[in-house]
Image (cartoon, rainbow, N blue to C red):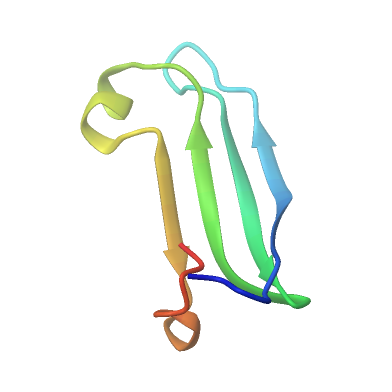
Length: 69
């Protein structure tokens, strides 16, 4: 659980999608002016999102265990 840290998402990439790919967005996860990971969000549903989901994230190894995810 976070008590004093503020988590901020800053847009890294916007992709409008096409006939095959859904629109998606990549964000950096910032805590105290440090990038601690990334998050991706797919908008809509299709074959790929059915199996892979709409939200994905990764926290850099040295920042894991701090509740940032």
